[in-house]
Image (cartoon, rainbow, N blue to C red; front, top):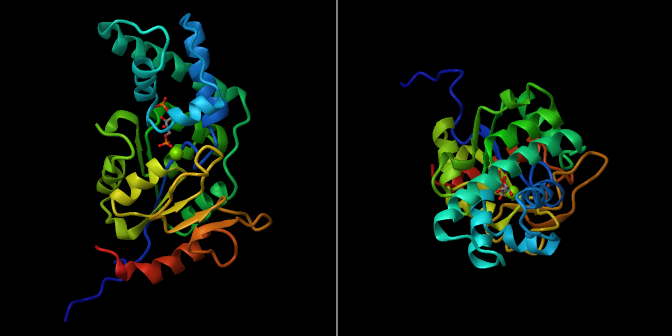
Length: 270
Ligand code: XBP
Ligand code: MG
């Protein structure tokens, strides 16, 4: 008879939570990323300006460099020569990143409701944490340090970010990269996202996903999400249920995730 090792995780046990960053951990797009892009354009002497609706449209293109290049090729009034396009994009993006990092220091960016509570609970209960994002790694580190403290990057066993994969969201590559490094199957994890692009990426990697949309993504199609909620909720601020599974206590905590894991893990491929 096979000996049962006490520390071996029972099959179907929840083991890790994987978080997107922009829009999911914090609502950074409109007032931090967008502002940083516009300042970089101005410093470069360009008359480009991404207002709030324009930026909402451009957010469909994941990744800052990709977004600049897309705009430059399809919408910009002044278009540099083909040879200069990629170089200009790199320069603008490097400057945008410097500005973004400074803005995170200067502005009081806060995490979305329930995020810090869930991260702390997950750590206490031994769940592993990871990040899967299209944003630049330095941005992730600065945001985590500014909101959770200087050791917060160490909370996350894997930080999959930026150009570490060739294809950004909605491709599933970044989630596959993170799962690979965690050495876990998708069935042992939940993903947290805020956008349809992110949901396509996470579900494309086989992950059950809880979506908390932002004002930019509220009207997107979240078919395939396990649960869609206004936010992760707090004991004194229950989240609004939008679609899919409804959390019993009006918030996402580890007890709720364990309950959903027990209910759904058997139906998932290993
Ligand atoms: C959101 C994005 C990012 C940021 C810009 O990523 O699309 O591209 O807008 O970041 P996610 P960079 O929701 O996956 O975190 O300029 O550093 O690329
Ligand atoms: Mg996002």
